[in-house]
Amino acid sequence: MKNKADAYWKANVSLIVKLLVVWFTVPFLGGIVFADALNQFSLGGYPLGFWIAQQGSIYLFVGIIFYYAKKMSDLDDQFKQGDQ
Image (cartoon, rainbow, N blue to C red):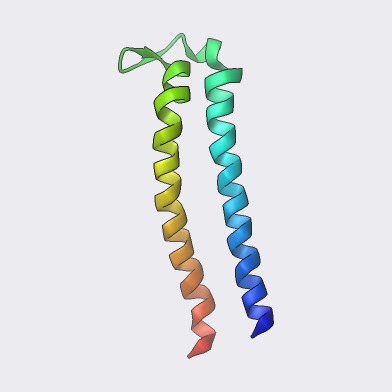
C-alpha cells in the first residue's frame, strides 16, 4: 500500500512540475524573448507578443487547470483499479 501511494504521489508531482514548466515557458518565451518577432502579427488588434504576455498567460493558466483536473481524474482511476 505504501509503495502504491508513493507512486501516485510521484506521478502527481511529476505532472505538476511539467505543467509549471509549460506555464513559465510559454509566457516567458512569447512575451519576453520572442516578443519583437511576434509583435509583427496582431491578435484582436494588439501585437501578438504583448497579447501573449498579458492575456495569453491567463488563458493558458485556465487551460492548465482543466488539463490538470482531467489528468488527475485519469491518474485516480489508474491507481484505484487495484483497490477493489
